Image (cartoon, rainbow, N blue to C red; front, side):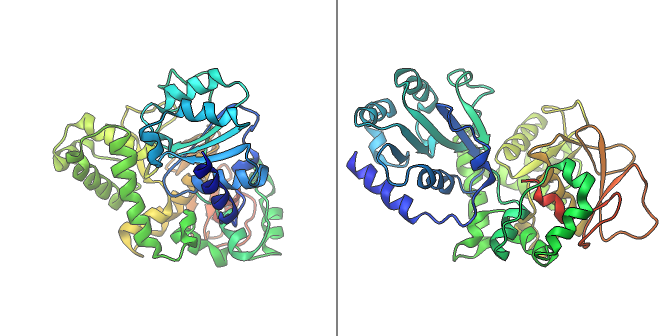
Length: 392
């Protein structure tokens, strides 16, 4: 146990967390079992350690534990939790939970046996904590940790402390908000850098970002999809090829029959693979209102703009980039569907959006909201695209 405390103390004292994530204030920390999901690379470990530092420091009532530790090849989580509680422990922070074979069953047992123990655990975005998990269905509070928003990236790069805004704020007060922000910093000076490398916190590391992202993507495929979904290694090359083919054409309607022919698998398998890639947060699926998986999506998008540059290395289509940014910024907190009338998105079944480059005067319809790139401040129903990066 002492070895775990020493590791905890070192990690908490040395954690680098230059941006305080908005999720920190959204979580109900009084819940006894909290699951934090997120794709690989978005900073789940840092988030747990930041929470420990903020609320406990190096107090021994809180302990961070990583299931990579070989200790758990011979000891169970329940045994560990019992010893931790016997020594006065109150809060366990469990990382890499999916690497522990009986994680859901033993989390339930800990919940039932130790009523004074709080557990916060991180998990892959591919894990289904509630939907198909009878052990945890009625006791876990599940949250999603996203990559950096444009606001978080901007605050970090420009040294600002700008607040987030609701969609209602942006729709009704965007001119006022944009003027306030531009009086402090010019967001357009930072926007392209965010689209290229600002979503994943590891751009702060002293390593080549693109190579690091490619490595992270492969880990998503090899661990988050193959290991968690228990898919045989021999199918990895097919999933990788499918991802490459889709990313090269996205956003686009998937030709499932053609993809099945090229990958040499069934149509049903293609749809399963696309769903896995979506769960891993490599892709997004866009449906008409009322439709959902397993139906074929109307369009498939790359999950975020940083991923687009790993495939196209600077030759990214600007309109595709604008739409991908908008979808990624909105879908976390809002319902995003395809839109009639040849527009791009319908948000919350009431707002119709079109993404575009810097708008031309006199070419807009009053019932359409335009998310326009390359403008600092909008007017009426023309809103700067970058401002949608302030939703969290």
